[in-house]
Image (cartoon, rainbow, N blue to C red):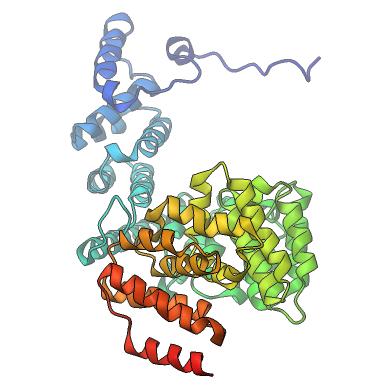
Length: 486
């Protein structure tokens, strides 16, 4: 009976007034909702009592949106339940990061110094989250300019320094700021030492969350210190972190880099006890390790991938594609080409009705080289032809900025005897001289591997050059002429 009885919650005045779980309205309706709720509380309840946590958080967020930082600080400083209000404000700011600028959150963290160290910690956490939500330089949302890159680097370093400085003066904030500090650190020697020092302070305060250990280990891995990760895992595995996916995955990647098979397998067994699998990055690292060791272990890799991805959708859609591509590379490295081709065919058949996943697969930087290796099988393996030729012809945007994909299209066009379609597609591409030469170099390495094909490759190159207004490089012509005469 007790097992099926719902747990009773403490009844409070605030719970009666606002409810147990209050969701703040979205930004467009926030100001109106704040005004209405404040008027109702003042007229119907009290004009002197402190507002409920939800109403105080609503007021602070509304003031932040109006950039009235000092007024927001005043509301926070006078509220008797300041930590709960700060928690609600931070959750809202992280839920709508585009509404609150990074500069405003940094200014508010400075304004909050007159409130409490907890308030400063809260807005530093929010600023770190806001910075991480910004699109990276070079993406579609943010142009790839030197100025933008330098600005992002400067913002990251300034914020990271603020986190370290705040922990130095207020050690009790170390546990709360450890994770933001880790995600802002790229792994330089100074950054690694800062992270380790903050972790030690948090452990000394006995307030650290074992789930944060994974972020610490990732910083060490980014800095190229797998031995240090392995050393720290020696004592971390005796905490609840041994069942944390991020922490254990970092240990697996470290042991894979160090070539320590037994320790990596032991980490995977720890995760299996909790019913979890390593992260996709750890899976890729371990499959790569199985292929590079002597002797390689392709059968074991197949077994692990079947366990991690029991269905084809899990393997060939989403982040699982990275694992599948690494498994293909392992089979190629071991000379198991039939198995590699079967995996490529499985990738196509699984995503034949999911164009976005096919595009994601083809945009992987290693897929073009893999496809070129098996272009000669396109007549007997129609799935390869559909994957590397049909998909690219129907989506020419896959070739934009990818000379290797243009060269791959030429390889499959020649092998599948569909060059007229390929010529028509390539003719519409804006290929400058540099991209054209890269595409031809990629094509020549795959299509001219045999002397009997050299003449056809040269003819194809000259036709593409004529249609795109480019010139076949002289060194390529000479090399193909020599290959034809041999």
